[in-house]
Amino acid sequence: ICQWFLVKKKINAGSLAQSIGSVMGGGGGGKPHLATAGGKDVSKLSKALEESRKIVHKLVKNSSWFSVKMKYNKFDQSYFIFIEKGELVMETLTHFCKNTNIKNGQVSGIGAVKCIELGAYDLENKFYIRRNFGSIYELVSFQGNITLKEGEPFIHAHITIGNYKMEIHGGHLFEMTF
Image 1 (cartoon, rainbow, N blue to C red):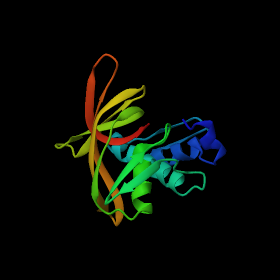
Image 2 (tube, one colour):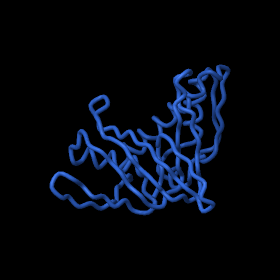
Image 3 (tube, rainbow, N blue to C red):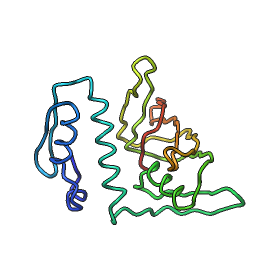
């Protein structure tokens, strides 16, 4: 599913589905805002999902409408960053690191977050088990480091989130929205 603002920016769910399905030896298609994909080789599902993330990331990263609204202050060699409501955290922080030439460091934070994608690495099968959390959660802990991966800043972070029932979840952070 592509939100309408993405469709207006020429990101097409049908085209994405076709690309994703081909990774699994199948195909896909649909409407600009809604599409499905499938394939014969289920063992490549994780690879297909990762490919879809890369495609969307590349489209968003290379588009002129992607803007970062976050604010920051620098104190000595540290930055204090305020990410605006509705911004993607990992995308915004990575963009900030590129623009300020940060090649290594550490990150931490707190706040209210939503649209969270967490993972736990399956050592035996060598892939991340992913889980999405859509509603608003309290960000109890956010710890990570910044390194270079293929010459670009890469943030590796783990978080702990809690809901209003005081249920706690945690793991590797792929993305979340403030």
